[in-house]
Image 1: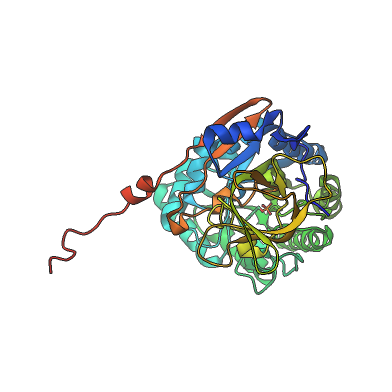
Image 2: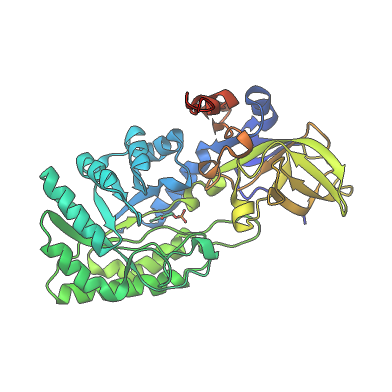
Length: 428
Ligand SMILES: *Cc1c(COP(=O)(O)O)cnc(C)c1O
């Protein structure tokens, strides 16, 4: 089987792979390689599809910035009416800078610092999702110091296995996230008692790349149970934040449709009269982006040909980090497919983990050919590093036949400029 990019926004016009209506070789000629390429139509379609599935529910969609926090991507969602889920002070600043209203921002994360909490309070965001009882104390003290009331939700760890990759599973009791479900009532009572806190409700996020709605049904069911327990004890619970995690197709997976996910939401928490917050990341951007690279060398490996490309694990970490599969397709697709061959596709970095694919069916590639990695819109560029002193790849956004560079290519000098040699070095 040969790969295909699982997105209608990156398809062939004749032999040439296009982003929407723009031939990718044209973009490569202008910006060089490697580069990330996002489709505005793709972002818009996924957002609208989720919005349509949630019709009738009192829902606020808070795009999870950590999937892709490029300013242009956030601004696109801001224009569609999205809020933001942020997990650091830096992401909070990015959300505000891109035009997300503070009243639609929620702040999650197990390790918020005093400064980050102060920034959230100054900015007047919708709510802080608190992940421990110690954090409740800190938020209360910071709010008292600032003379404001902090709206908080308690992130509960429901002890449900999302049945996804171990490293992105976040709702089992051994995971570091949230407050153990057994502590919901005492923690909520503490939030209600502490000065300058206004508990709004509960939150959860059980993991990422979920391919089945069953774990959601279990987790949201447990959340509903906790709402009843809290209300029976006289607490007000106005808001439920259901997190993100809906999976996407990388290869041949069938992720839940937004409609199926929304049906589980209606069935489990729809009747509680709570405002609902959603924090989708991957499902909105994952298949709206690709990474484009150029073949540097093709050599005879010990087992099969190896194509060395100019993108590496510093650009796209997911294969090295999670053994993730990304479709790899040629930018120019030859008409005859019978002479396609199995090849390994690797990057130039000095470790064997820098391997994108083993035994992938591709046309016989030659130096200079362009290839695209599918499903690279989420957890792609945001995870990039400058390992091997390779500056992170630039990012481009396409709409129709237009494109704009939305993150410039950095140079090695940019990296060096941030460092300095102490003047006492060598003078001892
Ligand atoms: C990562 C994360 C999300 C987004 O997860 P996706 O799988 O990308 O939808 C949402 N909420 C929280 C708290 C997260 O940490």
